[in-house]
Length: 197
Image 1 (spheres, helix red, strand yellow):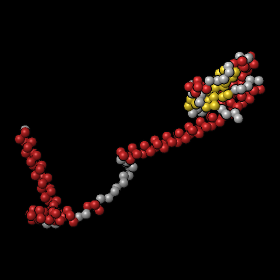
Image 2 (cartoon, rainbow, N blue to C red; image 1 turned 135 degrees about the horizontal axis):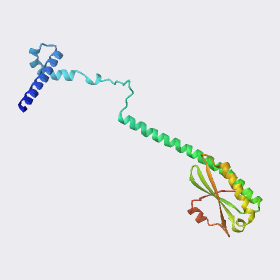
Image 3 (spheres, rainbow, N blue to C red; image 1 turned 90 degrees about the horizontal axis):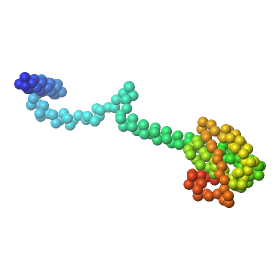
Image 4 (cartoon, one colour; image 1 turned 60 degrees about the vertical axis):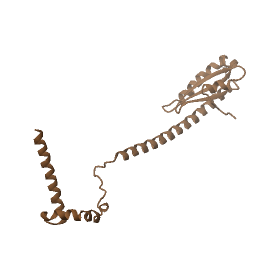
């Protein structure tokens, strides 16, 4: 069996060599029995006289095929542009949410002043672009007054007006005796303070 395999290989190689020989003879336009000496002598002139770089041409596929590098580049470009667009949308929505909640905080501070609850400050914690927490500081003596209880109803109405699919605002109150501890508020994430001047 092994002997027959080697014979098959030899026969295939002979066929390949004969095919090369006849192809070379056709290129030289000579009869095959004169070709052997001419192939050796003229092979260098055949390869150097033909300019193969001009024979290559770019063919475009009708099926819109792309290389792996083109697909990766398109993915990375799309990802980068998509992130930039999403970031811009989030920042625009955050600004819009800050503007709307700022108006409602001002309304709340006016409502507190109308109830003789003064010296209040508003602090903001941005949890995400669509989730804000607002902390209102109230003196302890005002915080425990019975007249403060209707303020929670007013805050509930404000939250209902503000809260949508793209904006959630929670109001909270903190009481203080002499002055509020800004350091503790900053540690809790309330780093923004509403300027009422």
